[in-house]
Length: 78
Image (cartoon, rainbow, N blue to C red):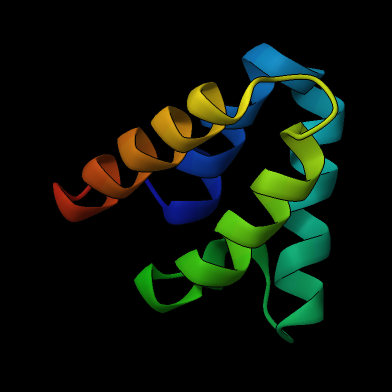
């Protein structure tokens, strides 16, 4: 599973699939990439966008847990 898919999966429970997909696609575009091209080196940018997106709807502890789980999943190869 690619980084983009992992991020979408992490965001969906909080913002739904359409918003999660838009966040990932917008991040990829801002980096001059497609969602399929996103890799480990793009995590800091994705994490910044996750924090901004989830800040109004989730407590900071939940956001940090989500990011930590995402980092673990990426490190394990999906």
